[in-house]
Amino acid sequence: MKLGSQGSAGSDEPEINLISLIDVLFCLILFLVMTTTFTQRSVMKLQLPQAQSEAKADPGNTLVIAINADGKYFVGNNEVLKTDLASVKDAIVRVAGDDRKQPVVLRADGRTPHQAVITAMDALGQLGFTRLAIATAPEKRQ
Image 1 (cartoon, rainbow, N blue to C red):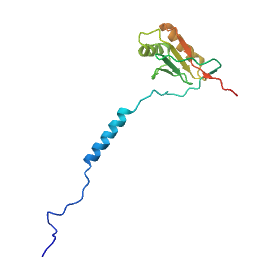
Image 2 (image 1 turned 60 degrees about the vertical axis):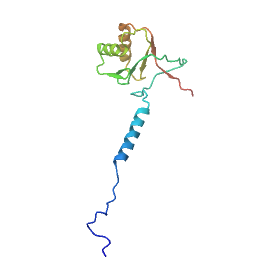
Image 3 (image 1 turned 135 degrees about the vertical axis):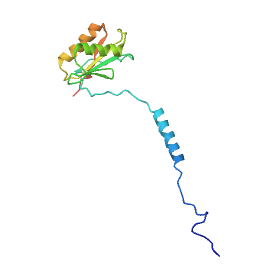
Image 4 (image 1 turned 90 degrees about the horizontal axis):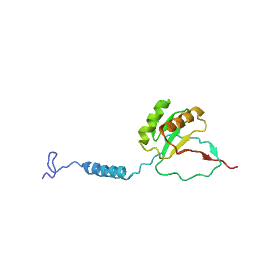
């Protein structure tokens, strides 16, 4: 009596079905992507100049112009590739649109060349912006 044979149809190889595992992982990835909140983080770290004045509340619809220590401009989240007045004005117009009454916050690094700050202020003045604030850090208490 022969109980088992080498070529019988009853011998099954164990296998792992990966299709259902891939489906579950795909659903998890979709869930994580859809529920993740994307916050606006600062592109660069600035060392703001210090001042003793009180901090005021920041209005919601504010145009932010940042200038790093090397004199490079960032309007909103976009870097301005050239540092001449015309390029800065074009970048401001692209981000701000036609709204010239919105407040503008100028965030210049404490080590920024003075000319870079004046160029940004000149561009804003020529475009008709009148509400300008310069961001500072609170003075360190000893």
